Image (cartoon, rainbow, N blue to C red; front, top):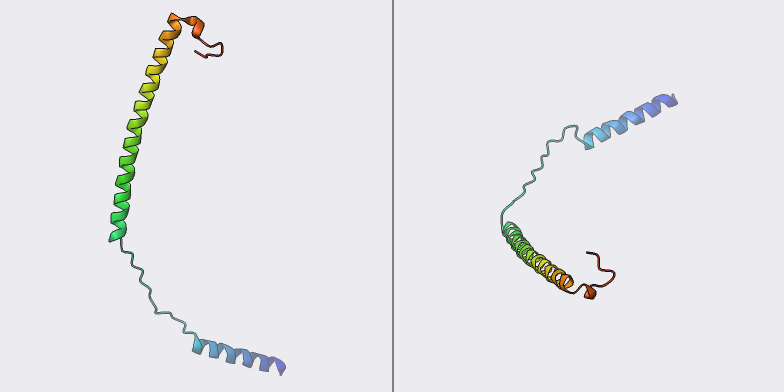
Length: 92
């Protein structure tokens, strides 16, 4: 008898839940992403700035490398003419 009471209580709870919670969900969600506006222009401007800065720094770096090579050649010429000026720990 007790078992029937528990089953009927369980069935009552199931019916109440079924009434409260629909079995089919007809809700739909739309997610829209907009790729336009100020954000695109800001990103494009920053990208152009980054490319220009990179090009400028590469140009300056190659200029510095050429200057260093010229100084090394100059120093080598001095050491050929006056080897006594060459330091003992010079690695060339």
